[in-house]
Length: 165
Picture (tube, rainbow, N blue to C red):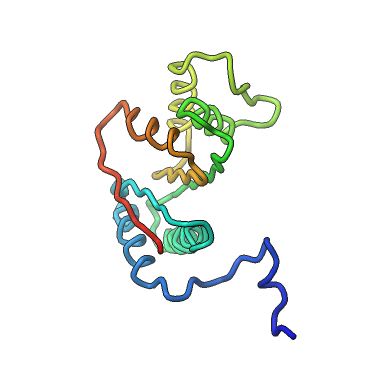
């Protein structure tokens, strides 16, 4: 007999992440600059399946979005993208463009030059009514991670790597 059988279901999402205070604190610290109207650090979160990466991200971002209500000059937009089927930075970029578009305006996954897709993405980002855009890419495969981290055309950044065990 179970006190709460819901915890056994695939779609169960706990409200807290136990025994992860240190990791959550480090994660929050990497995003703290957002509250001060500065760009956040890039974060690459990795670990084995089921250790809480997605839950940690959801909890930290929910807290950040809640905290933004205390600041008049802060407007954070979060885009979540599951990249399980994307095998390149091009495909991730197409999927990101489509996150900003209505169903009837979505672009196909092939047929555009990479520079066109990147320009579309920048146009959508520039049109946002937000002070910060946080892009959460989940389920990235290794080749897409390598390509994305090496195609930053505006500046070289060092990703902050956080491991959840």
